[in-house]
Amino acid sequence: MKSAPFVVHQPTNLKEAVELSRQYGEDAKIIAGGQTLVPMLAMRIATPAILIDVNEVKELNEIVEKHDSIEVGAAVSQARLEDHLVENESHPLLNSMIPWIAHRPIRNRGTVGGSIAHADPSAELVLALSILEGSVVLANHRQQRKVAAQDFFIGALQTDRQMDEILVKVIFPKLDKNVQYGFTEYGYRHGDFAVVSVAVVKDKNEWTFAYGGIDDTPQVFKEKLASTQDALAFVAHLANSANVREDPTASSGLRRHLMQSQSELLIKQLGAINDE
Ligand SMILES: Cc1cc2nc3c(=O)[nH]c(=O)nc-3n(C[C@H](O)[C@H](O)[C@H](O)COP(=O)(O)OP(=O)(O)OC[C@H]3O[C@@H](n4cnc5c(N)ncnc54)[C@H](O)[C@@H]3O)c2cc1C
Image (cartoon, rainbow, N blue to C red; front, side, top):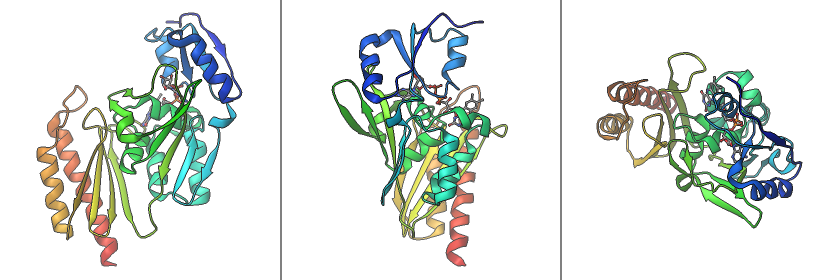
């Protein structure tokens, strides 16, 4: 199938981009890496008359290192962020998650903002932003606003972004040097979206567990736990009691099993580091 006809606009600054968004409203769609949107156009699931290509918008292409966060322009490709994190060693947790996104050719085109705006329940960057309690900055022709991750992701593929707003940047808080972390996921093939993904952050006896793929948005659980044994008991309880979806890709039983087994693996890895 071929896409319905559309006209592409390529603004080079944010002012132009938000003005186009105001002017065309519901007739327009923003395109970034196109990894999700182009197949939707080809299948005519989306039939916008106008595409606003944000790849050349300079304000959306910056990576800014702050002492307590890294601010990533929405049009920065996932591969560029990956290379930046390897070079700068500035965010080990994020660095450990990005290679799990699809394959490098997809990360070459797929953007950080495209992933966050699309809000797939299994997306690694959505999970990272949720466990880190990060935020996003959105702009329309009148104003910019900052929204916390927990308020931004409101459902599967649903966010708080309004029709005329463009995602400008994504703010990932940094973890202190002495905070421990881990990430793993299970998918059917390398590069597939995760069936279940798990991120863990341990700050002394404060543990945070975040799960992707189990519900419409990442689920984050915080608990003070005195020992590895307590942590193992806590994740067993979560795997039994959390709301976990069932769909044609996996039963809720498999997802509960993955929640528990993957969490146990990460807890034991952190325990082993403590014992060294
Ligand atoms: C085969 C395959 C495997 C994949 N596997 C994974 C995976 O394992 N994990 C994972 O996380 N992702 C995966 N992805 C998704 C991919 O990595 C991209 O994150 C995703 O396609 C969206 O990014 P994009 O830049 O391509 O966005 P686009 O396709 O251009 O846009 C996606 C949506 O976001 C909106 N949008 C984009 N940018 C903005 C902005 N600045 N402001 C407002 N709205 C915006 C668009 O209007 C559209 O609705 C996979 C994709 C493919 C094709």
